[in-house]
Picture 1: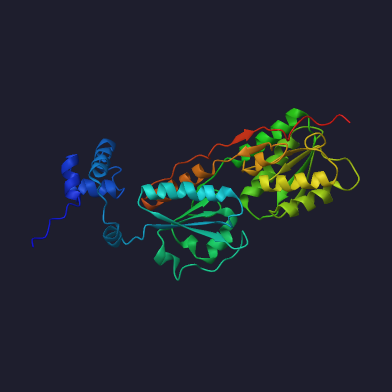
Picture 2 (picture 1 turned 45 degrees about the horizontal axis):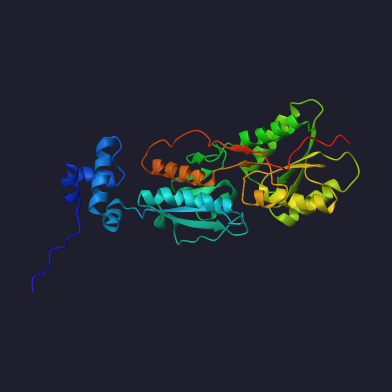
Length: 339
C-alpha cells in the first residue's frame, strides 16, 4: 500500500499563497514582524494562513525560542466579576498571539501565597499582576520575570510596566456629582486594603471635596465584604452628631453593604443619604434604588495589560495613558434633604 501524502498545509504553502518568503511567514506568525515587514504584507500572510487552515507547530517554535508562551495573571480571589473580566480580556489577546494565561488568585484575597510552580522562571514568560495581590507576586518570585502591574503606582516598581484605569478621574467625577447636588457632609467608606488604587481614591476625594468651602469628609474603613460594610456604616452613623448626607464607597460591594446598614438605622437611600459605588458590577443594578457608580471596563483593562506584556517581551514601549472611566448616575443619589 502506498502511503498518502499529507495534505496538511506548510509554511511554504502559506508563503507561496501570500507571495512572500518563508522567513516573512515565520516573522508574521511568530508576531515578530513589526519593523521588518509592512502591515499590508503581515495581513496578506495572516489571510493566506487562515484560508489554508495553517497552524504553526507551536511546540517546536517555542523550543527554538526558549519560551513557554505562558503568562501568569495574579489577582485577588475572584469574589467579584471584575477580575473575571480582566482575565477574559487578557486571555482573548493572549490567544490571538499564541499565548496561554494561567489565572492565580491570591488566597484570602490579598497577601502571601505558596508558589504554584517549582520555579516561576522555568514555567512562565511573564506576569501580569494586580497591585492588590502584590504580596502574592513577591512570594512566587513573579517580580523577577517580565512584569506588568495593573492598578499600580507607575513609579512603584522599577522595571515594571504599569496599566491603570483612570481611578483618580472616577473619584473626581463622583465628588463633582455630589457637590453639584448640594452635598457638603461626606462619609467615605474606604476599603481596608493596603493598595495604591484605594489610596488614590481617598486622596482624590479629600482633595476635590476639600477645595469647596464648608465641606467635610470623614473616613471609616471596612474589609471588602457586605457584612463588614454594613457594620461599619451602622457604627459610623448610629451615634450623635450631624449626619453625613453623602456616602462615598470605594467599590460597589461596600456600597451594597452600606445599603443594609442604612436600612437597619431606618435611613432611606437617597432621601436621607445618597450613596455611590465604584466598578459598576452587576450588583449595582440589582439593588433598589439602583446604584450611582463609576463604570470600569474590566475586559479592556485585561486586554491592555496583555498588550503591555507582549510589548515588554518584544522590547517595545507599552501604550501609555490611563483607561477612561464613566460616571453612571442612577437612583441612589439626589440633593440632600432640606430637613
